[in-house]
Length: 72
Image 1 (tube, helix red, strand yellow):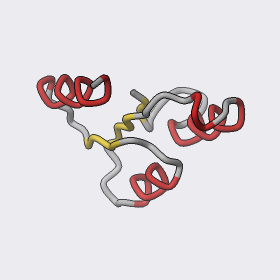
Image 2 (cartoon, rainbow, N blue to C red):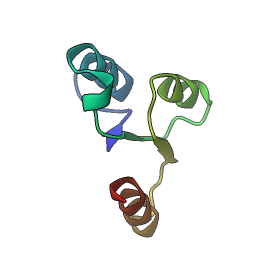
Image 3 (cartoon, helix red, strand yellow):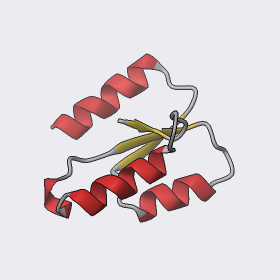
Image 4 (cartoon, rainbow, N blue to C red):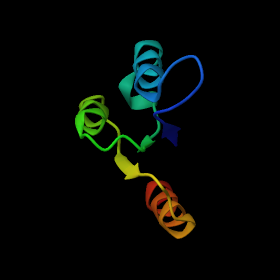
């Protein structure tokens, strides 16, 4: 689970760094969260291969269900 807004770098930058360090098949599925509503962040996240995107604010049940899907 990676959020867009983080200290020092954003979630997209973090995913880029992970991809540069690890083979694509070594990365777990990434669920990305963002409060950015313009769509540009979502397009970039999916372009980086995130598994799914959840818009904020997150409801606990939505997050729980999504994490169960990822782990299944």
